[in-house]
Length: 51
Ligand SMILES: [Zn+2]
Ligand SMILES: [Zn+2]
Image (tube, rainbow, N blue to C red):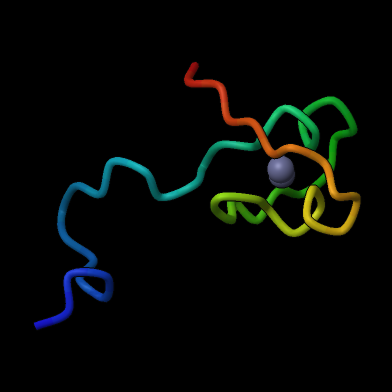
């Protein structure tokens, strides 16, 4: 059993949310943690703000 692979009925943090950086630039955020691909590339501190 691998909890990480389990895609249960309710996965709280499963993206659907863009980080501040991507939102500001209207980029497609991959929701990566702790840093999404765009922030990683720019060495930008990835920041997710709950709606
Ligand atoms: Zn992002
Ligand atoms: Zn980011």
